[in-house]
Figure 1 (spheres, helix red, strand yellow):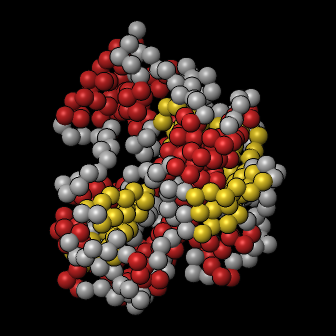
Figure 2 (spheres, one colour):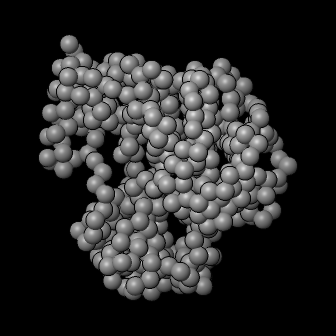
Figure 3 (spheres, helix red, strand yellow):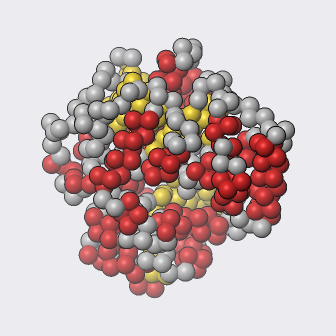
Length: 433
């Protein structure tokens, strides 16, 4: 009865929040305060349990991939698709998925969780499966140093009951000490040795060509999935001793690795649950998945594509820059330093912007626009002083009207939300609660 009343009240709070233009924080907070057991009670109903996806980069996109791959195989998947990756975000998402009568009709939950909030979430419900993507320097004003971030992911692995899927190439995840106390079975994903230089860790950011391939990282177990070759949106992904040539809708070399991770996890789940997996369906679905909002999402204005690329740390920004030819685009960079972005923007000095030097940047914006302009100046990247504008509304309008070239906007999280809001006034943009 308590869960039924919580559902009714929570849905009403959620409706009020929507009417007032709010997001998921209020209904999620309501659930946490009124009925702390509600999340566990709902998730306990799932026959295949809970999957947690965590790591510094790629959580939202990979969660979307995993959910769509599982759905294509016939499973009913619950997920926090808005990317709200705190515990209260999961609570709010459950309110969306549960019926007014209290039925939670899903087979499995696939949850993106922030590293710290994943540890809190495991006190509510332990995952049967987890996917640990990477550890990179991100929001150190919040997390402290990078080894602490790794320790949070380690706790997720230790709490996982059935299978942990690991990035074998990650400097922190791919060593024996990290997985020493895992009770669950281990699976891996990674890249071919010749691709390692395309995915450097923080200490390798300015010397990708000098990356030492024979380092302390090791292949953990018989490889589940490997990214073998990359060419634009095409890739060769290998598993079961076979190579598969795939052409993806999604762009960015980092997203091709996310696809390999998603495939590895789905295969692990189906093998463990003794479910029949259609390999043809798996590969066809993987190729057709579109980007999550703001993570390579593309909108059009008068036939001109505008792509939004989320950046929040040196590694992610570097891979974003490496994933396109600057001569084919007009480029905008928007940097905020709100809490959700991380307050310390010194990481911008660890990004190599020299690839933009020949073609320059058309627009610079966000709260830290002038810091970004200074950073570009030191890498000899050209820009016009009048195109440094802290007001994102004005900057978006200026950038959209500059020319008819395809456009790409690199933006931190809260800048991305504001940019989507402004673009929605001009063209169709997917609504996300």
